[in-house]
Image (cartoon, rainbow, N blue to C red):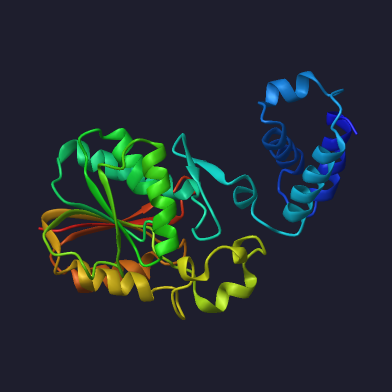
Length: 279
């Protein structure tokens, strides 16, 4: 089997699983051959030996059975940076880049002393900010020890481990105030929605996705804790579900009756980011 034949075979296998089966077939073969896309397409006649054929068939079948592509390759791009991922962490998504962009905008105007990334998972938020703001120190918390191992790996990979402190934390419980900037992409999927999620999403950690009957349990707890820890003039940015804008805004107004509260849309115009600036 040569490269061209392998790609055609894999794309057919992935047509019912992947949104872009040809692209994913290419990515999996690039990983196997450790080459870029240009090299792959320049040599469709390259023959795969029997070991490579078996390895390629194995990963293609895993993807066809619903295993998320980043769990197979072991990495994903976020904000232009490469992050290691394992089944212990939620896979970073483009929607979360809005939170990072908003945080960077705020940091340019408000140099912060104490910053917390709550539910850090892979560490994509904390590490990206530390890479882009070379004077920044940030504490990244997660309740999962396995997730913190991944976050630490990513911090070391991007040479920011000395400025990203990873701690075991249930939301803001171990933090004392005042915190100038609180960031979080918490679980916000409603429990009843679990069975309607794509098979690949249901292979990600349930604890990183599910948050009670309406998907608001973790956000409600986070807001309650933040009320006692957010510094005057501080900012909190929390990613939310696209149907949660009104409910989350009401929760924030109850927790922070004097704060400036806004719900910002993503590129698709859907509510995506809660912003709370205390007075």
